[in-house]
Length: 443
Image 1 (cartoon, rainbow, N blue to C red):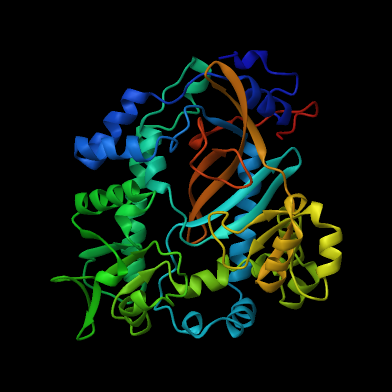
Image 2 (image 1 turned 45 degrees about the vertical axis):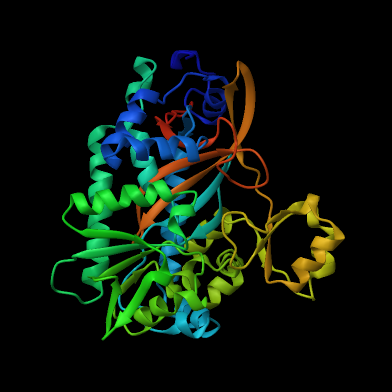
């Protein structure tokens, strides 16, 4: 790896970050250590083989470098969003237009694993999306256990085993806190990790990691399709097992599907704690909310302080709901925008404006879309078969109750993040020290 002393004159500033992301080809991922970490966490060699065969592009071998200033600005944006969403005026306005199940009392749970997704540029950060069932946290814990420093200068940036142990402990305590917030006084005893056909899901290996983590801490865990759940006498069950808490990985955010009827009833009747839940999705992840969060005038009407408004307007790319009144203007300006469905996830049915066809335009007009000003992702150059390849990356910040838990990068090619790109996947984030400019100020 190039020595840090060889960085450009801006040292650890933006030019230095860009230089490292373009010039550092050293591997941080120790393949044997990753295999050992997976074997230890999963507890069975055949499960390790499952991960390696099913998800060959799950982990990137190179880290992504970011500045301390970028981390600070992401935290500032997250704190601003959380402050606004906590306002009674925000909740009243958003829930008044939400489906009935989102308006129903959530029972106290905050919602686990909010994912704040950012793009970076020289001037700051762009919050492009908020998710309420963000996957990957346990995968990143395993990835962190398999990192190695390629030179002395990198040693201070590599996650320590203590930090990974602390993350896993925080995860367990987060679920226990959700249980307590819901008014329960006895210890949390059982968790169902729920998704449709879970064994067919791409991130099924992560479900196994969560199952092992919960069991290691004395909590019975099952991985279940929601159709296998039943509600009997006010108790949610999976077979003979009574379920205290559901870790909800469904993308049916409102629990509308017929196969989810038992889970929906359990949530509405508070027969089990469901987290994340429909109300959290309505308050945070409905993409129409981004249009409100970056609108200074409307924020002012909600009573948001000027300092918070300034952070949000600066951090969230201009977003507006696609409506007949603005359809022609957005079409003429389409190259400036990225179009996303209101309740979309994983980049599905999302389109860059410069790729739009007239047919897709009609789908957008007939659907429920927002147009977000395009914020280009940052780039990371990696060696692939001895040839430099430029990949895009975003940063995902895992957040619980307003607190940052972990920061991960996702490397990819294409319009949106995916785990189908050779050399791509989750990557560790290495934070460089703050730069010191000519005035002696940290930047």
